[in-house]
Amino acid sequence: MKRPSWTFGVILIALAGFLVALAGFGAAAYGQPIIGVSPSSLSSAQKTGQQVVQMMTIGNSGSSALDWGTMEATSNCGSPSDIPWASTSPITGTIGATGSQAIDVAFDSTGLLPGTYTGLLWVSSNDPAHPLIAVPLTLIVSLIAATPALSDVGLALTALALLAIAFVSLGRGRRRV
Image (cartoon, rainbow, N blue to C red; front, side):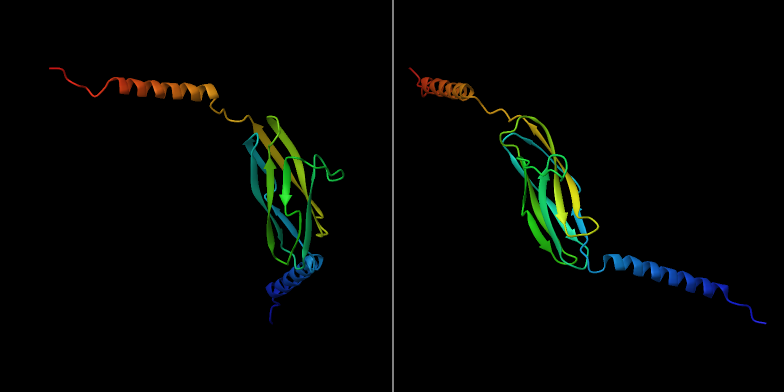
């Protein structure tokens, strides 16, 4: 008498379950854009009066075009507001299936007092699962580096002039007989 093969039956059931699960996963994402943003937060530490540009990448791992845009807000995207020390370039775009695009995020400390400034960069898209992604922004501003004062420059020039006078007054070193 031949014994039934249990192993073969278990493998077929497991394989059928895997294919059903895979089909269900693919159906949700098929034909849709899938957004990814990297890095997930940005920060810059700089002196007043500086502009620092950092790169952020928006990616699309989906199978259709991703339309995206950026907006700034101090706290939430329900009330967008201009953050004067942050900007992006470009501010909107379209990325083809499985593509990516780099954008510049500029931190400008011109006219800011020393301190820590925070805000959010919202990336909106036509990805139905993630239509909005928040990217926290932090700017740390410190004082301007000290520049030599006019009196310091004058003091250095005076010392140089005195050295030149001392050298000239020594003469050529004539000997008297």
